[in-house]
Figure (tube, each protein chain N blue to C red):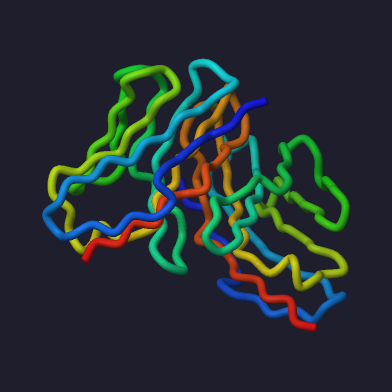
Amino acid sequence: SQTIHQWPATLVQPVGSPLSLECTVEGTSNPNLYWYRQAAGRGLQLLFYSVGIGQISSEVPQNLSASRPQDRQFILSSKKLLLSDSGFYLCAWKGGYNSPLHFGNGTRLTVT
Amino acid sequence: QQQVKQSPQSLIVQKGGISIINCAYENTAFDYFPWYQQFPGKGPALLIAIRPDVSEKKEGRFTISFNKSAKQFSLHIMDSQPGDSATYFCAALTGNTPLVFGKGTRLSVIA
């Protein structure tokens, strides 16, 4: 069966510090991978998605970037965090055509 | 065109009652409609999904009703329980494009 791992679960970082969040998927190959952000009590904002190694689509211009160095690994990064980067970050994967999205358990990021 | 409009934003239901959440879409190319359930501090989990070739799908206490001509679909939770208290998201999809999510409904089931 397929599983998605996302870490860390919580993170407190000072403004201006770098960020690296990692997500890996097991039990499937060539998944579509996604990063979402969710502000407190709000909806799901798509940040990046990738349909293959090295292929990244950005939905929202901002202080973040994403990379996919391996087939089942998706990394969300920032060189300098802003207060507005605080939120709940969710990684997700999807199989083939018209298949559902499966989410990880998220990382709660607080920028202080 | 790409939006999915979800209502209500929040909902309070008595234990044992029926919870109803509605979604509407514009893009007629959407052909897969999942619902997600999210508990605080957790990622959303797929609850139930429907394709437009059927008008209703039922899994236990959860039912999706789909009206293709009206471009609307809804989630019904029968015999609502306090454990159903969560945020629910509808979504729509066509092909390999990213899912388009509604803004979510916070459901509270009170005893």
